[in-house]
Image 1 (cartoon, rainbow, N blue to C red):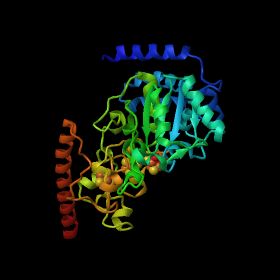
Image 2: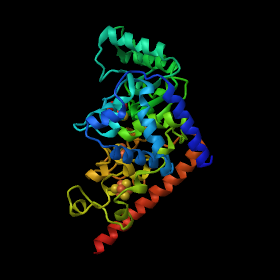
Image 3: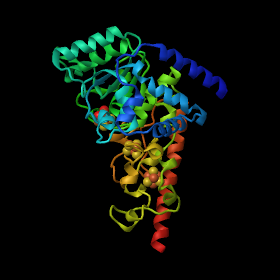
Length: 379
Ligand code: FSX
Ligand code: SF4
Ligand code: F3S
């Protein structure tokens, strides 16, 4: 689609959305930003960054700002399953709220166990009411793996002791769009790691409705808020990869845009944590970085308003946005080297290409790492 045509379509969609009643009578985004000392200029810079993240031309920036302002037209239900709550914390735990936090505050969260005031019977009632009231209109975000089959009873929620899987299924049935937030909800995560004692499954195995996976343990605030904005702007499923991850966020490997990539190419590796190479910011491949096998945008977008990310902090990527990474990416502080990476096992063509590429990459990396070591020894 031509950009102009796309611009027109989005503008029209936003105008229609603006006519919808606000879900809650709350302050507009501009007032929230002002209260937190964030200028309009900073907000527009943020909107420009989000626009670039979706690979849209800079002329779309005002639309992005408008979409952020309209997040209060959209009811969101957020459920917790079996997890550590790190995904919510990724957004909420901050002493100085970022623009992403504020936008998330502005979203009409109808139900979120970590931050809602209600408890017990009242909370349960609120959830049922929200599902009925916003039938077919709300966004469902689910965090956590879900004990399934005869093990469903391993997770019960609320005063009725309703099973987690039942909660998820009921909320999914009437949702307009469903996002699995975090690796646990996307792929099972830590509770599904071998031997998976609670038979934990991803959300996509619990409901028959389409689920967009937003993995990462946790995913960044950018990827969570970005998905809401993408939905507001386009109202359709984003382009997805073979694991149902949005390509705008998970289309590149960590390794592709890593700031240490020059070191990798030059064969300059940290040999052990704390050595001279570590002080000089050498590549972390030999101390276990899984960036070459991991699809996510951490090296481009980072966390906490672009402050830092694992590799910048000095530890390799552990592959947290890949399926079954707990089982397949370990030992975390050792390279995979020639160990065959077995997570890519689905049967689509893309996956077969994935296998070929990853195998070649793995071999290439092992050779490169070895050559790097020889070069250094000679020096
Ligand atoms: Fe934790 Fe969310 Fe990891 Fe899982 O995160 S950060 S265990 S992806 O479901 O809370
Ligand atoms: Fe960066 Fe890791 Fe790739 Fe090295 S192996 S360049 S640290 S992503
Ligand atoms: Fe996870 Fe690797 Fe990013 S560990 S947070 S995908 S750098």
